[in-house]
Amino acid sequence: MNAVNAVVRTIINSLREARRVVVLTGAGVSAESGVPTFRDKQTGLWEHFDAAQLATPSAFQRDPALVWGWYEWRRATVLAAQPNAGHRALAAMADHVPQFTLITQNVDDLHERAGSPHVLHLHGELARPYCEACRRSYVFPIRAPKLPPGGARIEPPCCEVCGARIRPGVVWFGEALPELTWLAAREAAKQCDVFLCCGTSALVQPAASLTHVAIDGGAVTVQVNPNPTDLDTSVTAAIRGTSGTVLPQLVAETWGVK
Ligand code: APR
Image (spheres, rainbow, N blue to C red):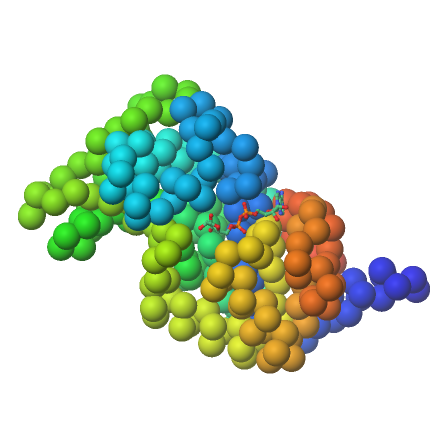
């Protein structure tokens, strides 16, 4: 058996024996569904903007219509997208592990639509905007937004109760993560036997620190990414490939299911 096979065998055995498995996903997991990642070049109205510059409280204060329009465009993209084989493999994995925790940095709902319940959304959700002032939830109209292909500026709606501006339900750069979600994610990472980190550049903190929490806790750690990241040398195994290809293979090899 060569070294690569030996590592894959270790992962498969660890998954079979694990009582607690944690998976952390990032934008790369939704890439094969046609949802652009954060480091992809933007298109349309947004081509001259960096995603990281639009996803801030100050960008929303400065130009609410630009930022709300960007999130509506992203919401429309997600509504038109379907979960891919990677999302489905993670939903299937939950059926084979006594305690399975899925943590995502993604603000889309593709994990849920693939059948994963109780997803810990560290960075909020596109579908859950709320009032800037009184924090009441805002319910989107049932119809998907009709937008030109490149997107459009859109004024954010107002709260029906207090009249203040509605903001996207996501965590922006510089904002705190939802506390209970973060505590649950950290605890799961601390206690797990196997930790899989899929489709994330591992650049954004504190989410990226979860892999190190798992390493410090003695877990077998696996990264799935077609590109190198800073985690390559820290994890037990860095598998180079897309989540839509690697995750179904891993589930099939480990539990003999498709
Ligand atoms: N399968 C797996 N990984 C992929 C795929 C794929 N098909 N395609 C791309 N990737 C990888 C890229 O190589 C990259 O490492 O996904 C990663 C995407 O990185 P980012 O765009 O930085 O996404 P993410 O890590 O989720 O970003 C973290 O940053 O902007 C904030 O809040 C935002 O949640 C986001 C956070």
